[in-house]
Amino acid sequence: MTRVFSGIQPSGVPTLGNYLGAIRNWVPMQDTHESIFCVVDLHAITQWQDPKELARQTREMAAALIACGLDPRRCILFIQSHVHAHARLAWIFNCVARIGWLNRMTQFKDKAGKDREAASSGLYVYPNLMAADILTYHASKVPVGDDQKQHLELANDIAQKFNHDYGVDFFPTIEPLIQGVAARVMSLRDGTRKMSKSDPSDQSRINLTDDHDTIALKIRRARTDSEPLPDHAAGLEGRAEARNLVGILAGITNTLPENVLREHGGKGFSEFKEVLVAALVAHLDPIRTEMARLLDDPAALDAELRLGADRAEAIAAPICARAEEIVGF
Ligand code: ADP
Ligand code: NA
Image (cartoon, rainbow, N blue to C red; front, side):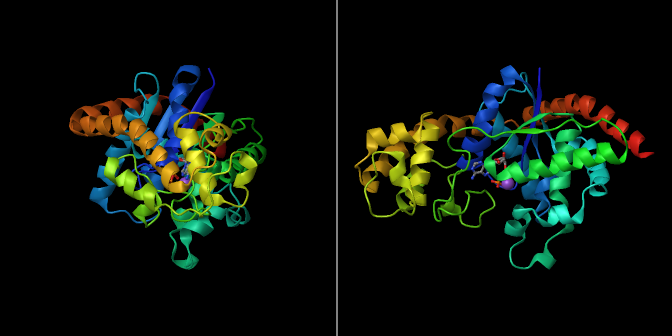
């Protein structure tokens, strides 16, 4: 079975963007691939996190993943910092990747903001750690949202340069699996920015922990234009906010935007938004309830995650050790 790896940062509550762009697509892979999923707390601290909050959010993210359908019996689910191979291989990759490659990463520019000099050096080398996350499992397929494509290309450059510099054929080529109509969910406040858990505005996103009233409020306040919905996809041209809401409904109801427009074309947004709220609540409510149940028994959850870390370690440690041998350690 092909081995897949994917990770998610515990830098906040998982959003609808994480769900539609990533988590939901991971669920069926458990039966078709050897699946490894990781809560990447090493990545989270590239931007300062309150330690108590980080610990809480890490557990919360793990609970969210299980509530969304990841089953620790059918996949390996663990916390990144529990498996040391990630950081060790990342150091080697820091020495393989070129500064010029990192300078081209658009996410660094987005996340560092205006004062780039004040960003952590960890944020800068984040893609090297991401390459290590994947390659220390020799994973060849990586299901991610469209926002991560550039990082995966860099991971391949690193793998190739490592193989070339040391004259080995050790690291495989990685292929991104970018899936679904909602591969990029945009902010509810600004159709040109992606929805992100690290966006300072809570109004910009739907969190998987949002209840009915919160979802309703956020969707009603979501920015739109004043035209009714078109009845075919070409009519969404130049209407980023409308396109986003249509994409969300299509994603959550497992259909294509064309079908959403065939059904709802001609409606104004006040009417369409109520349809969207109902669909979101119906889909997300069971997840929220299950998350709360899992978080009620932290000891059981932690035990599950320790078991996951042991299984991850058994794969990652020998591959990392071999890479260390190759460089001469
Ligand atoms: P965030 O930017 O919300 O902190 P992460 O960097 O932890 O998200 O990414 C976790 C996964 O969720 C990745 O596979 C990423 O591609 C996906 N993802 C994040 N935001 C979105 C979005 N707005 N739309 C689609 N997928 C997304
Ligand atoms: Na991201």
